[in-house]
Image (cartoon, rainbow, N blue to C red; front, side, top):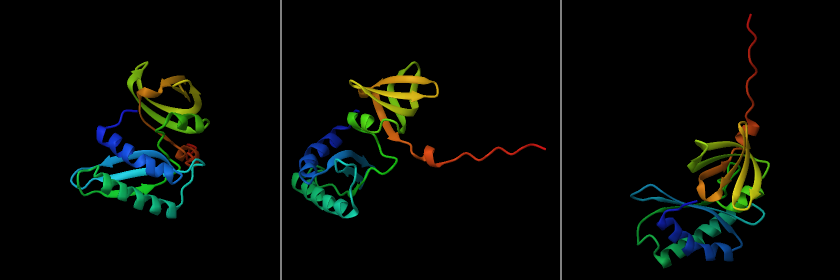
Length: 166
């Protein structure tokens, strides 16, 4: 997954602190202009993070950002949270870890004319993500994935029964 240079710079600056506190970085996003929002998603190896842990992580990340001056004294909002149940899939290992779950994947370049896939994750084959869709099974190179997330809402949303005519 290709990331903007500034996001890579932020990741390099905060990763040692995040990891020293026992967390893994899931995603870093810088959203908006003017006073942008820096969104950090993190979790422990078991996939959890508490509200108190988010607060402590936020304080630590804020201190690192200030000391390293990553945003060149720019003003920004900082949000630190968990990936949630519709989590983004940003690391190769995520696709293996969540095998069996429903996901949406967007890629570039297209495979067989397709750029969007929705289906059940089937794990990994080397550096490729395996997904079973209604149209068949696909093997997607990780480097081509632009955006991916779990879609558990498909599990919770039930279709309304069709009304009988007459």
